[in-house]
Image (cartoon, rainbow, N blue to C red; front, side):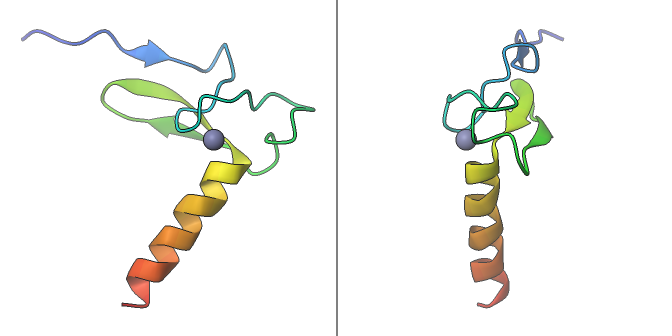
Length: 62
Ligand SMILES: [Zn+2]
């Protein structure tokens, strides 16, 4: 089975969602967490994590 090359952003510490750096001291390090998708794995920064949380909350309140 052919497999796409996985993009690994852990080393570069660039957010998988907004492509902005989320290394320590970047302002997005707090609350970042690892993401393992089919085509990419790496960190989701604190800003995007908050956005995802808000979205999930909205869905749950439906
Ligand atoms: Zn982000």
